[in-house]
Image 1: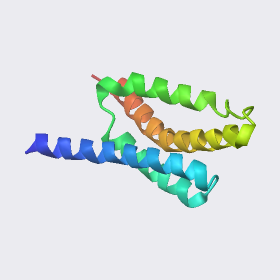
Image 2: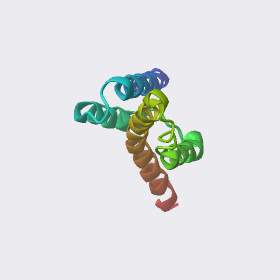
Image 3: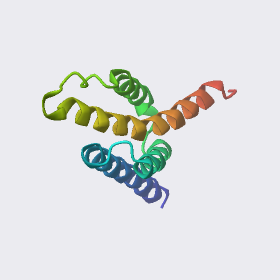
Length: 117
């Protein structure tokens, strides 16, 4: 029974990730800097952080999130057809999705490291 519950929670986290990516890509195309989309992505990011990242994935996940946030608006110089702006909007939304997940995972990792025993 416990295995089924863990598997179900993992699937919820996985689907939160997929839905968040779709919202980030579509939102970056259609509605950049929309506060409702940002709020939805933040909530989905929290769900991802709590349900989807296992102990073995912590380092890779945090490294990938740092890389994602560091690249920022690297596409801005692409001015043809506003491709750089659109890609920048998408990347900003993906970073908005992953930042709360990274915070949750980092706190969980710090808790594990700081816990006595």
